[in-house]
Image (cartoon, rainbow, N blue to C red; front, side):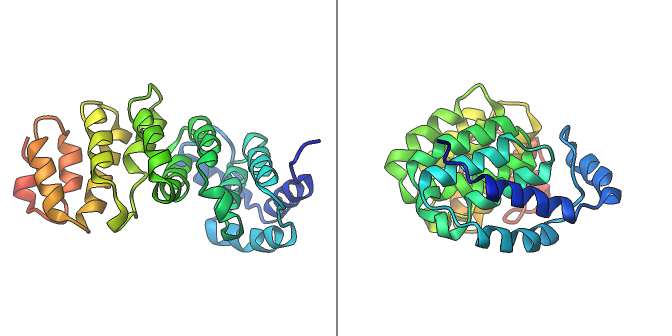
Length: 240
């Protein structure tokens, strides 16, 4: 028997449709550049609508959590259902499941099938990142593989997943992920590299300054500019 909580899935979809705003849906879809349609629900309204739904349908175990997240994600007809799946995956009552190394398979599936920044960035930073911090020895090898994977979104995940880690940042892993992608011309990778470095600069600006200087020939102007935005004057960061 499937572990999916179909009552929760149905309740989530019903709650979202009740607050759909058709007039907002198309502008939101155009902004995200989504092939999947949207219901036109902004995050605050979505959060308010789903909070009582999630509270009314607690999941009993890791299998139920994983299967229900997957059903919401894979069966989504609207993008907001995928946002809801990510929210469910990150709820505090399920933190033990969400930060277990076994959860990486779920997140990998969501990253590869989501394949766009609005879905991937949330998963990378708020789902993959916490697993990496909780279980670095078991998780870092997977992140290293992703950094060299053929899939663009696995690679972006490897680059940005430590955003927010602060003192817990594995700088060797961060450097390796960036070095593996520094020559890629894709905008999302170049922007992600700059973002990851800029965020780490809040904690260790000298490390970032030294890293950028050592890799000046490899990093794109966009990556360098973003990395040094808050620690170097514009006359320095825009050259090249």
